Length: 165
Image 1 (cartoon, rainbow, N blue to C red):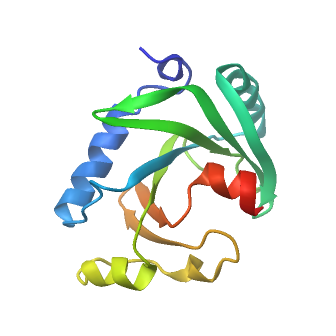
Image 2 (image 1 turned 180 degrees about the vertical axis):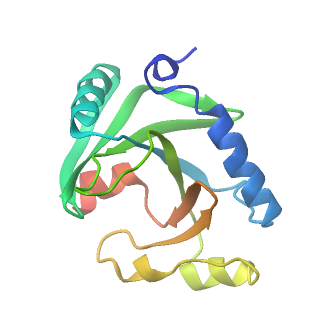
């Protein structure tokens, strides 16, 4: 069992729901890298606690203020395993002031190979949120499901942190 399971809980139920939702939408991610998971917390205190614990399980790649709150990104020493996938990175955003997020896994991000118009064009029935295509660094498209979302990028989180920011 991965040490993350003791700290954050097993991500398998979250990932099972996520992959079932993608399958229902007929979104093929079989050739996409599952880049990282995002785990939400309810308080700054919990954010600090998890940041300290995760620092023992991996490398803090970055902690930046984004959207008015810090977000920490970690590369794990040992990846999370989900079926045949290995997930190396985890993102922990602190809560925004005045906003409440229940603690738990909140989204996953995939790296796609195609350009965004081609990727979106493959799935005309999908309701992609394209607002973040204007981002200067690592634009994205997103699918929102009940209780979680899935984001699609062209570059991995680790690559962006190490080489583009």
